Amino acid sequence: MKRLCLLPALALLFVLSAAAKNEPPIVIQWPTENPALKLTFDKFLQQSNVPGQKFYVSDVTVENLTDKPIPRVFFTVYFLDKNKVRIGQGTLQVADLDAKQSAKMQFQFNSVGVPASLVLSAKKDMLAGPGEKTIPLRVLSVPPGASLKVDGKESGITPVMVRLAVGLHQLDVTKEGYAPGGTPLDVTADELPGGSITIELGGLSRDTIELRDGTVLLGDVISVSMTDVAVRMDGKDQSFPRNQVKKIMLVERVIQQQPAMVQPVPAAQK
Image (cartoon, rainbow, N blue to C red; front, side, top):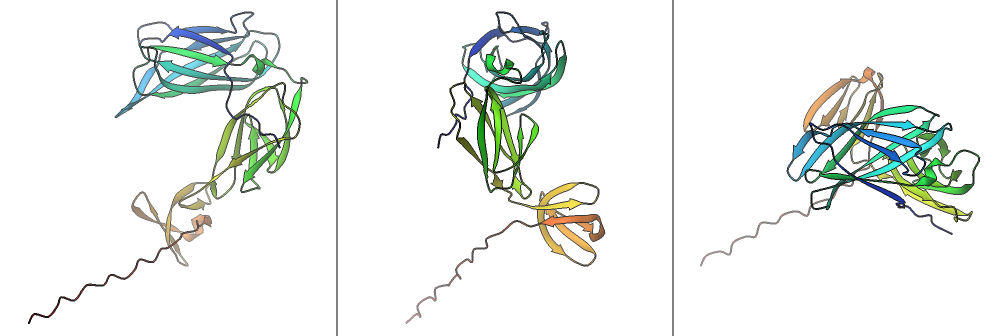
């Protein structure tokens, strides 16, 4: 059975100087011939700085320059230092951009240094409109029975068959009791029917407590009584009235028995 490529192909690159704090926003029209999109990156503001890594945020406006809706916009933005060495990256995605419509979002990325320039990578295939060639794909998950979203839209419960247009897509799966999973998926025009992809969800390492007000807590359930539920979260013990707790989901824990320590008896002195 054919496995589809999981890594997005890079079709077109733009290299521009990154905006300093006192410089105007970066404006990019994509593609260079017959532009369909206009992207405006506001100033990059550093939010935090941990040893060896910096976090930045920027407001980005994406404008559809055409008279047709664009079903998806998916860019990978790479950041380079002054020596043209890649030091960070981020993903920019917008869905269902109507004709002449603009969408503004907050773009975040992390870097191991100070960005001096950026490289914008994308595929022209993402401009494909509805009604064009689609490829059937069977999506499975481990474990099965997970909710699937394709490009942010509900697409059924795994295992499920979906039809994907040529281009780059984002697949996300969620299942109660498991950590979410997801992957980008590049569908090319020469793909044949019968392909499948399997996404594995990670198991949660902590218990899940859902309160009746919708709050979901992750921690270690210590005890449950007729009146209270005791939970340890971030090293602190908290107690909740049992009437406030809607659901408790306990993870499986494997307890390893440590062998008994035998203290050697010193030899008797003669």
